[in-house]
Length: 172
Image (tube, rainbow, N blue to C red; front, side):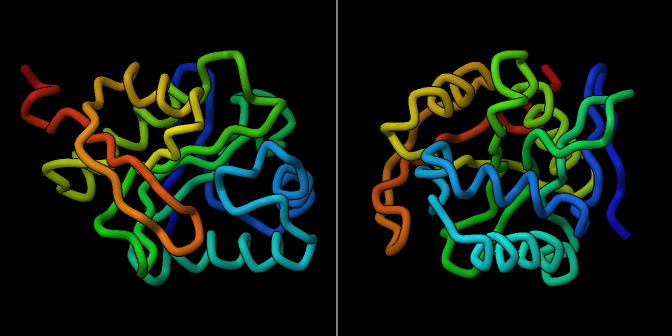
């Protein structure tokens, strides 16, 4: 049910129980502060379960990012995401420390956006970014996104909506 995407250097694959330790390590760290962490192992288990279940609930979701030809270890999570308390679907990204600094977030988010436009039929996409998360703000800009407005989320606080270029704009 969950397709696998390939980019030049990455594989975006279905989340699986084998990803638990990498996710738990990331979510226990201060690096997870912009995505609801740090978290306990139990909270990370619930997070992984929701990651897997989102595909069933919405018919799409976020992939585990791995290096193609590597050992299949998760280095991030990227893809279309639309939890109940979001104002609209988004293209979400999270890179673990082992995946940072290689341009992987851009490569994976670009592939996820293409999937949302080409396979899901989205006409537009947004990404919700904490304004203090300077790396995510830089990535949104690199993806050609424009800031729109902010919304207050009960758990994550103020998030800025960054609008991706539409499928039509990208085709030009």
